[in-house]
Image (cartoon, rainbow, N blue to C red; front, side, top):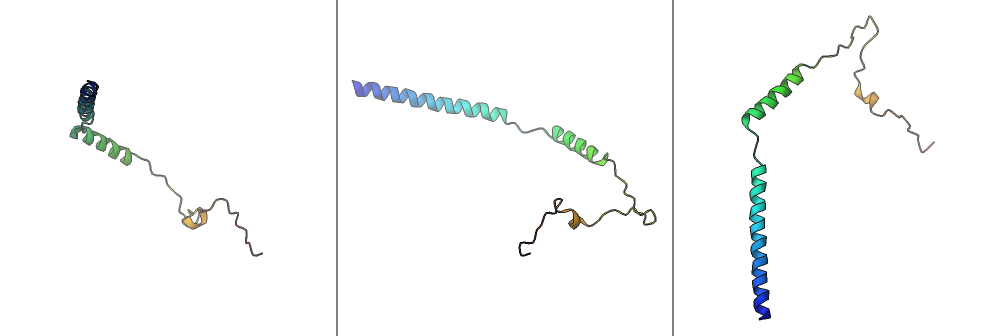
Length: 88
């Protein structure tokens, strides 16, 4: 009798777990719908407009004014410049 109750209980628990898994997977697939092509096109057009609407900064490049831009990126790599030679 005790074995019979344990078998019925395990069958009920397994069936509840299987039903819960299928219910959970059904809800999960409904939530993961891909975006429509209209949404993708609208977001792409908006991003392109944002890119093209940026204002360009003018850098004075006249050597007569003495305001040439710093074009060497190596000079600005380490802003702290705290190197100390260990052999001195």
